[in-house]
Length: 251
Image 1: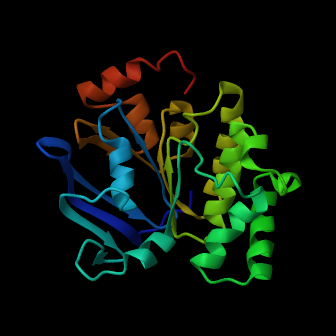
Image 2: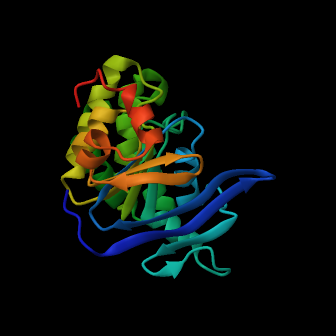
């Protein structure tokens, strides 16, 4: 947790509608350099849509997304350059099934960042080692557990040297015994100064790792603040009701 006051991404009244269905009504928040932001809230409240809009996997239908002070939704903005700086780790890993672990971590570096094969391999190996997957470089995704695949996906994402890394419920597709290994990797990443935005339903993890917690419900940020405030002293009834379901967990 090494947050500064330098804002990297600023969402200003961001909205997203599918026809008449308004999924995001007004999302306004600053994400600062080195900050760990977690997004919690009920299913269907807009958490994953917020993340997908930040990465332009979904096109916002209103508002602004500023990256270092420039609105990326402006016509003519270089979106590919932006996407190269903002990585994403998905629920379902999204690894290339026909490529081995090492190739999965090299291909984006070579195609997008134009790194040489040698450089891409060196960086991939360094990051696979960080997540404990260097012994599996020749394995195909189908030969790995879900937790192992997600660790490879994280290594692939950080091999692209992102300024910001987005995680969309990275443990939701995992068996319970595999959740811990992925959270451990994310916990270590959080100490490196990397800016992270995490949609999660792991409340204990969110409380432990976050600098800023956003509670999103009904397409708006109902409440945000320091994890101690959100988890121990939630102000809004909807937040209180949601967190009541987790009270038996040891926050």
